[in-house]
Length: 508
Ligand code: MN
Image (cartoon, rainbow, N blue to C red; front, side, top):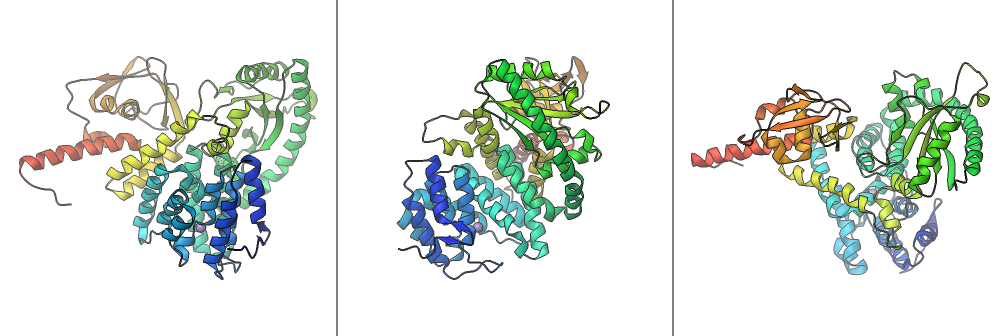
């Protein structure tokens, strides 16, 4: 098969091949060229809504994955991802030509796209299938993200109603999943692409408000970086990189809303990121920074010793800039500093995708298993969720709530969504603890099971081994989907036993 056009509308298959080679020098990139020719042939003269040749879209998705450092097979699958759905070529044709591995990935994506239910059910059903597909092969998630990003980039060609729906779904579902998987780069990109379609007025307001601020800050951060660089040199700390990073637009927006739209309170509009070779040096840098600049109280965060739930690690501190940097002595500049190792940086930016990037070098990333365990849990419990509406509400709650950190009596940190209760805490630790809990002591004080937990609470669950199981009344106040799931499934089991006793079969 020959490749008639290698570069279309600025997107080129040769760029993709070059990019994959840069991460994986040993890669057999012929498979990418073959997949491109196959897809181009299959899509033929099809056009996108915008009037450009259809192949532009899979090409765009494949480029996103190549940029992320994915291997040649995932990139090939991305090129083929719309073939079975939209052309006369079948999955069997793809398997015959490219083998089982690539065909299975394409199948995962195709299944996700095939759902044509009407109404709200369709949405929920989509989600369910999504999690099942994701749990089987994480590369399917990555291709789906790339597919979504490319679609968001070309959203202009669609009618406004469709634009809004796709953008909203991206904000509510795709971005939180990317966040959970630790893929900061993808999360930020999806959110910033969707933002103007979902909140057009707010988007205009924000860009007008912060763009001048960005410039001002950037200037100041440049100065600041020079001071830090000199100080590190003096202390013989080898610096891998130091750079200012502008906060993504949508996360700036969310933060502004939290702070009554007061831009002065968003300290990390531009943050300074310092990357040094190892953990000991991270702490050394923190000390050096504090020698030069006074830290703000309560803003030093050690995410190295206590990583965020998605695995994020870094030291954060917010400091007053040295006075010589501030033109106005009464108005001290405040800046956030993030200190990390190169490994932490890769992990924070690429999450699960970093695993494929370094597969060749044989580096094991244990954090991947932890991140994927979350997806697998979700796929598992959605099987039992009968009520689509509540499944959706449940996972939305888990995704969107801010999180609090509370402690077990032994000092282990447990992360929960805001407004969680002791029952949520108990189920987070173990389903047996949830099923037998009968009371709680919070910070050594007796409390009731529906108390709203606060950051830093020490939670000691009292159990009654005689207890037969959870009370369905708890459903009135528990917040996490995990607790709800366990309580509901216990109630269902009890009902079934009762019906068995009466020799009645439930209709289902
Ligand atoms: Mn697609």
